Amino acid sequence: MTPNSFEALPLAAPLQRVLRELDYHTPSPIQSQAIPLLLEGRDLLGCAQTGTGKTAGFALPILNALHENPRRMQTRKCRTLVLAPTRELAAQVGKSFATYGQYVQFSHTLVYGGVGQNPQVNAMRRGVDVLVATPGRLLDLIDQRHVDLSAVEFFVLDEVDRMLDMGFLRDVKRIVSLLPKRRQSLFFSATLAPNIVNLAHTILNDPAQVTITPQFTTAEKIEQRICFVDRSSKKPLLEELLRKQAAADTQNLSIVFSRTKHGANKLAKALSAAGIPADAIHGNKSQAQREKALARFKRGETPVLVATDVAARGVDVRDVGLVVNFDLPNEPEAYVHRIGRTGRAGADGRAVSFCAEDELEYLRDIEKIIKMSIPCWDDHSWHVEAVAERHARGTAPARKKASKPGNGRRRSFRRRSASRA
Ligand code: AMP
Image 1 (cartoon, rainbow, N blue to C red):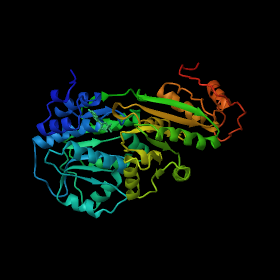
Image 2: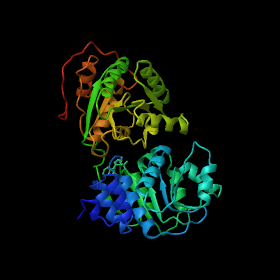
Image 3: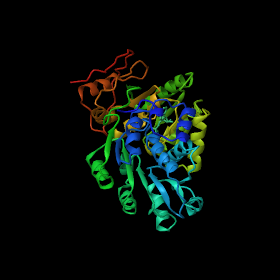
Image 4: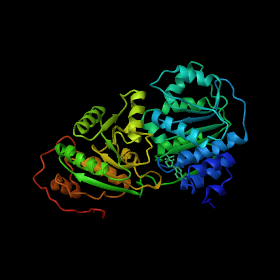
């Protein structure tokens, strides 16, 4: 039986207290299934997307163990190691541990690249209970003997699918080889492709498996729409959407996805010039610039964030009401990750994707993995019927050859939610 309240879970008083203060009443499905297994000491293979509450799902039982079994810190060592693919996600996980563990006596620190290593080395000198790290910088510090993994009791690999997409497989394997054999391991991924399951089995010992959202299905709370347009119409359509969103009473923050860093910069500038304050975050921005942009976004000072896929990982902002795919991603899984930035923790959200004629193949790949056809939104002045029809007929042209669409503009609202033959 899975518990339907946090009180029913055998979590220690300091954790129950923080959950009450945070107003968390009901465990999310991943929490109610994973927490009891983790409290029993089982290894876990979790198939769950961001936004399902998985961070509390692993942080609460680990904090519970640290609280019940406090130990003196050993220099350069950590009792818990959480590996995350990006610094934003690592920072987010670190923040979650700090929040959930605010009444627990424990120490934690972050290790990630893009910033000076000295403060991280100093923090590790004393040893910590929880180290949240990205793989590259962690290995740098291990190689310089500033970090020693021989005392790890809890090992969490978060967002493994992303980790592999980013080319961290070798780093992860090296890190795992440095861990003690006796440990509790937790492995989370939004997808369970065969290479991911294989990796999981080399790391986990007789794991329990918890699958939350079925593989590749997108969160039900998110209203998805596709707009068939010319490339040149994307900007005015975006401005119209963002102006409407900014006027909304609640959830007025928007994230716009661009395929390239250059595109993200250009778009943020153009939007700001058009009177819609926007910031860009991507891999070429320094950590300080990204953090500043994120803070301004959270405060609503710049209600629009233009992001690339990697930079948006770990962005956890509750009031994101709209995600716009200005460009469709060429990897279909990225679509699921992108739209998961809205509709967080049960809130409603909208995801609007722009599709020009040369992106029809990407759309087809996306619809294949989400197992639905995204309803078309054509009640705007830039709809191109010829592209919509080409998609409906399934005759996308070769990716590079973007022929000029005809003048098939129409202003009618039509939904294509029924699956096509
Ligand atoms: P995550 O999937 O871990 O990134 O969590 C998504 C969001 O859900 C975060 O903003 C959490 O603070 C929030 N959250 C997690 N668990 C709960 C819960 N049981 N009740 C309410 N909010 C939650």
